[in-house]
Length: 534
Image 1 (cartoon, rainbow, N blue to C red):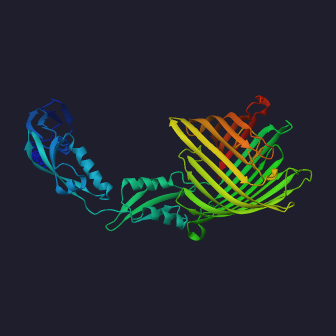
Image 2 (image 1 turned 180 degrees about the horizontal axis):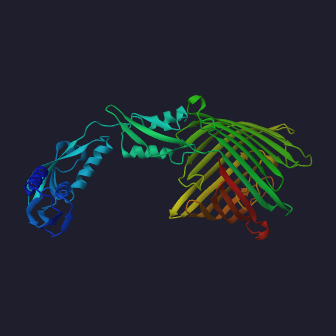
Image 3 (image 1 turned 90 degrees about the vertical axis):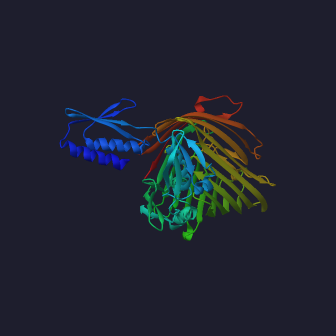
């Protein structure tokens, strides 16, 4: 049909032996009049009708009026509504009827073809053959030309190519040899979404050759070093207004091994100071085994000092999960001899932990989901009393940012810890919590317990991608056997977080207290902080 139309117009133009200035295409069914610039354009239009399933288009008449040429045509029935016969190979694959009627042949062909593409036949094509008519509709036979099945044969890294070899081996382990389809391409791309160290400049690209299918990854290195500073204002135990703060510096991926070095210092209003040094090497000797070393020093004014070291080895379950074993070596020394609630002690033991972090696409949030679980089995020696005690310690943390709708989010967080022993605990070995990243509304590390838990709900309203308001409420309880107290605690507050040229700035007002105590405005805690990446 296409060829006949083209031949007709060539002969038509030759016979006229002159260029006509105006050409009009007129649909005899609808009487729609369409102007085109020349005969070649008219041919293209009629040809496009056949491509749009009007394969029975007929040229009815051509009328010449002065410098105008009118071309009358009839599209005929739309070939998209048709009876379909499918081949045996399609029947075996899709388990469908051999004969059926469809009102949308294009959709039917696309649906059938997608099944084969999902099986890895990326270059499959549906073949259509006209077989006659039935009840005024065409009969079309469909068959499949599958070509060769495609699987993922490997990855090619472009751009930032200094990623750890084990990282790429893990990626190949997850995807090499799998069917080349949209599902796996989306999964590959998702592996890099909000990855802490690398990102993709563009979606994964594919190079097809006769014998292989290579996925090209155009990587770029992220700015992952961070400086996190927080200044706090509040009252100490004597109701004196004091200044406190936190400094947290992370050096990450400086040597292109996804390694991290963390320096943390904190001073609370009650003259307590914490210092942490942590080093993490995720792919030790190019394996899936990682090394983590952590040293923690806590000093409570001139009363006592604790030093804890925790070396750990862990295994990458996948890109977001890891499980590890660690040792604990802790020493505490009483500096003030009048501090009778504390004791000198030495601890050592082993533990296991699990960590899962799901990244977020929202730069204002640290992550979408995080779960951390720990268990330690420890032997404690109280030096002066020469007493040994067995202790079990448990810790659980979970946080999730739930998207309600639009710009509305709900942050859900819970944390709890417990230490158990047949012996009584000394005051200087208890858990210390409370503050900016814990039970807000209380001074940093001002709460001491052998068991505690708290949960929080925080409503967040995003203002574009640059800021969000939040309103939160927290409830918790602690148990301190040494003081024989089990207070129930609450905390409420609001905050504002926004990006400025040097990083993410946070401002927060909070107030925490024990249930039953009167609300005091002078107990309001003010925190101001900034997180900067470099």
